[in-house]
Image (cartoon, rainbow, N blue to C red; front, side):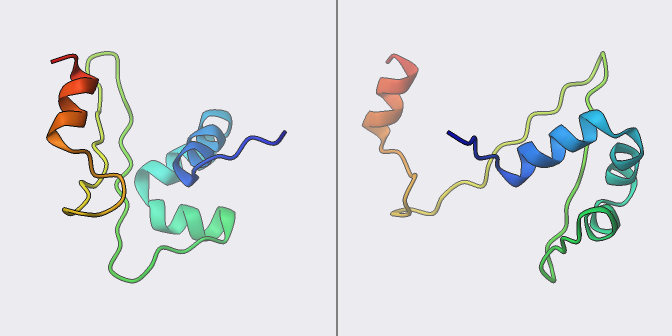
Length: 84
């Protein structure tokens, strides 16, 4: 059974094993994606790449779904997940 990766997981895996790509991704993600992988971001979309340090941890929250979109959780579901 093959494992499917999100683009983010795939990029992280490459960056963990390829220091040159990691540095390019940190400094110019759009160019790194285009030159190294042949990928381009849609017009108007930007990408910010951050690197954790021993004293700074980055937390990225996913885009919050609009009301009624798939993936939105009800207050009751959230209370159940949080143990309330």
